[in-house]
Structure formats: C-alpha cells, structure tokens
Length: 336
Image 1 (cartoon, rainbow, N blue to C red):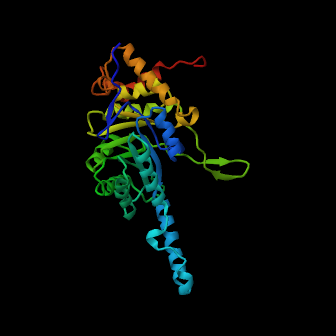
Image 2 (cartoon, rainbow, N blue to C red; image 1 turned 60 degrees about the vertical axis):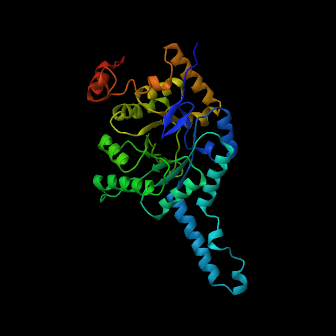
C-alpha cells in the first residue's frame, strides 16, 4: 500500500497532518507541550494572553512604582526598574521562546482581546519571541442596549487590522458564530488582514449555583454534536473567502476530523478530546484519518480536502435552508 500524504497547509505553514492542539491547559507548560509533540501533534496553540491580564498587571506595576516614589531614597533603591518588572506579557513571551527552543512543530501564540489599542503591540513581541503565527481570540459580548450590530462588526475589523499591522507573521481570527451575516463578516476579516479563520469560538456560558444562590462559571467540555455548526460554515466559505480554515469544537474521533476536512477545513483543532483522553488521542485520530483515506483510495489529505464544500458537493442546497426542511420532515419519534 502506498503511504498516504497526510500533510496540509494552514496559515502558510506546512503541517505533517491536520491534527492541531488548540489552546488549553495542556499547552501551558513546556513539559505538556513536549508530551503532545511526542504523541505526534502537528502544531500547538498556546493558551491565550488576555487583554485584561496585560492591563491589570501593568497597572499594578505602575502603582508599585508610584508607591516606591513616595518612599525615602534609601528604600527606593529596593524597587525594581519598570523595564525589569515581570508582567504577564513577559511570562508569556518566555513561554513562546522556550516552546520554540524545545519543539520542532509550529508554535502559535494566542491573544484574547476585544478593543483596538496599545496592548495589540504585544503581537509584535510575540513575533519577536519566535511565534510562527498568532491566533486572535476575539471574545466580546455585546451586552449593552446601545451596541448595534454595525458597531460590533467594525470593532472586530478594527481589532484585526490593528494586530495584523503590527506583525509580519500570519494572523488567524477565532470568532463566534453569532454574526447575522457570517459570510460577509468572514470576507471583511480577510480584507482586514486575517490569514485564517478558526470556527468557532465556544462562548462559555455562566450557570447558577442553586445552593449558594449565585452566578458561577461552568466549563463543559465539547461533544461531537457541536462540530456541525463549523462544518456548515466552513463548507459555505471554502472557495469564497481566501483564507485558511481551522475547525474547532467537537472533534473527538477520526470521523469528526474527516467530516470537517471534507467540508474544507485545512486543519482541525482539539482540546476537549485531549483533556478527556490525554496526548495519546492524537495518534488515534491520525491513524483513523489515514486508514479512512487508504480504504477509499485517496493519496493525500489535499486530494479530499474540500471535496464536499458547498461549491464542490453535488447538492449545495444541503448546507442552506433546504436541509432544514429535510431534517424536520425526516425525523420520526414513537410519540409523534
């Protein structure tokens, strides 16, 4: 049997196969990153550095300097110079540099913000630390009644433009699926400089703790059922928007990965699957993808990628309203 070429291109980077570790606790330390690479991962996305984290720690450092300035000259000598104060970005940049020294696979930095501003300059520092690309993880909840859709969309576009103007490495944008005109928004992000789109960001929802009568954070890991939203939009956008596409959320099996690749994803990102089953899950997925391709006579991932996108599939209506009607009419229940 001829060996299957599993390689794929994402953000201009050549990956040995399409399975990428998404941002998670498993990408937060060099030891766990090495375990992922030993398990065969194709690339890693580091945990996000948050806009609020940067601003909070820099403000704390600033306040410390102000406090030190009020002390006697003898005491002031014990305070560090501002340039030497270890803020959040410093630790993050060290993680990037250490990861690049320790790993052979591409290292993608992740920035989580929602406003254009000076903090986006950290993107250039991520590039200088050695990051192969940046994933801009935009998490903005338009909770004000004064926010309108046009302003929210423009905020995303301005944010992407502000980051891409800072760097020469590719920038992917991880977005939520809640835009009223997703295809148009994807095209606008691409024109603003995005080299790739990561579909989709899982907005973590709050819960209510009934015993304590308080609102509490609640993290629920994904299931395979969640991948269909990304599958639909990647299939629709493939060939229409000139970016790379990464699918994230709901990839737990080789079948999950294959469906998204057929729809047009260039790679699939996994986090919940790794958290549930550990780094060995990487090999399970890669071998499953390879076996399926061999069984059906494919020579490579590139050969099958996007072959069931909306532009390529024999029934393009299946990704739009017609499929909604078919699904409702075909469902049966013993109680109906």
